[in-house]
Length: 130
Image (tube, rainbow, N blue to C red):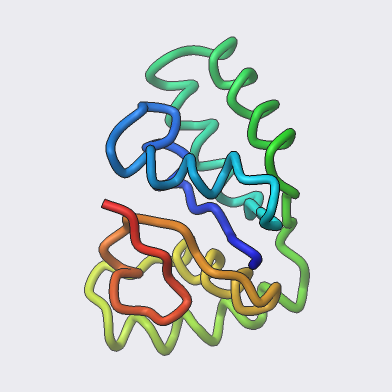
């Protein structure tokens, strides 16, 4: 199975919450392929930099790179994400472009999104943690 680890799942993992424990089972598994979109790395880095400082942000960045393959925003994923953005903003209140990039990356890579983000709760591509 291929999993895309969303910012929500990473942050819960690093905080050691109950949802983070569910994410840990996937993140630390050696049986599955794991991906992290670079937009998620940016979201995590910014939050950790703001709340815990540069050293902690760098430690977590290195860990994410160790455990998952980073997926950059390619032209193909950008176009897919734009299509998703237009569609989902009609259906889901508060849907953001970053959500579209995450879902677009997951669809392009044929991966399940590991998240607890409410925007993804009812999507078939989601492994919902809470």
